[in-house]
Image (cartoon, rainbow, N blue to C red; front, side, top):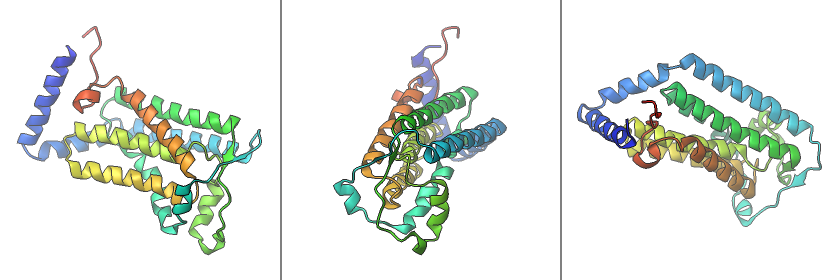
Length: 247
């Protein structure tokens, strides 16, 4: 089957879904959530657990001097906002959405190796160049909600911000998946708004500075671009993989 044939099939499928209303989209969502659910659950939990173990080890045991990241005008403009903590911790829900919506093992593997590589690149940078944000002039005792955060995610391992990187990576994948499911602009805009809120919260909670966030955004976009490259969706907006030569 040629790439052109796959694109024609995808366009026909999307038109048919729109013609019959929302029922196909709802069934598709249910099927996506059920497909490979055990593998998704175990894989997502395992990746997050292994990542945090390595992250915390490097955070507590730097082998090189720690570099303090510079503040920019943007960092001075964005003040500390305790309410941003909600968006900050919501990342761990947001990153679980793309794998939950993936419908094939091949897509899931493609997503997994790329996000794993993204995290390994970040961890390698933390290993050879440990960084931290400048200590803010904040009395953390006044904000008990930050006690737990500071206990597990102190403001070290700053550059690049993997918080931002994984948020951007997830947002790009969600955009492709939601388009593939025929979802409209509203839910896709809400997804991007959630992502932007997470990125903003990294600065507003003073966990990161602007330079960290910029590097994280570049890392996340690079990982997403590489992981989606085999997809016809780069042009057509779907996630239908190109068939192999044997087909």
